[in-house]
Image (cartoon, rainbow, N blue to C red; front, top):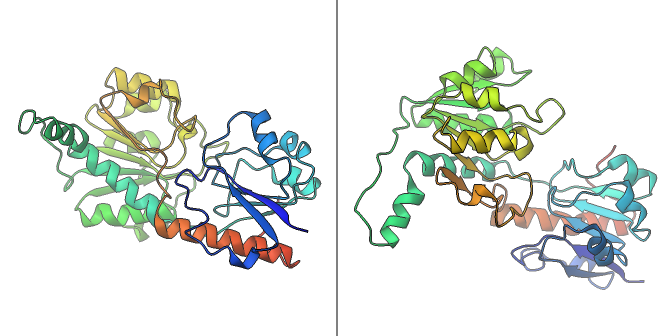
Length: 320
């Protein structure tokens, strides 16, 4: 019997060409859904015949209610080895196997620096003026050497961001709830006394924390007001770590100079969202992990997960 597999949120339409699906040919019929489906009824209709669903990161929440409406579902594959939008306990109770894929931490590090450099040198505004044949040079950029980068989170990604900052000759501060002096020293960073100390002292603040009950809303109005008016905030981690309304107010009233954002509370970002038009925002559509090498890993591992499941030996299992 041929099983049905839906690959969700393949915006670029590359899932079936960037990886070799021949290991499951003849056993699985694969179809790709390129547009994000936000409506629950439409999602159920799109997946109701599927035994297998491949998810892209955390774009599609899979909870007990959805699982209950997809009785044929037997295998969920998510890109990455962690997906907070899947109720793993509910999946286990429903008899649905959940598997992940490998993922590189390098792409979000690189995008962090693309955003930071774009903000520091006003690249969007200057590039637009060039395209429009406007005035030659409009802004004065910030030097990075000698400036201070504050890192909220110094894990795999944060420590790599720190290494680049040190190469630029920046001073690096770091803070997270359980960060130790030894780990900070190992990354050539100074452990900040607390998050407010880091925010007050930094010219650039970059977030590299996992979203949890402890980090949700970590930066609110009080924290954003503690930042310097010339400082920039970069978030390539999770939008919910920053209070959305407080950030909008900070940008509009210029408590901070601007923000580089790759993550948003609602994705895709609504067309009328003010973050699309605020002049001091450099925004990208959640591109942190979107690179050819990472996508090849995602989908090659997804095929391996499916083949292993069909052979009765599932791999890269995600447990409740």
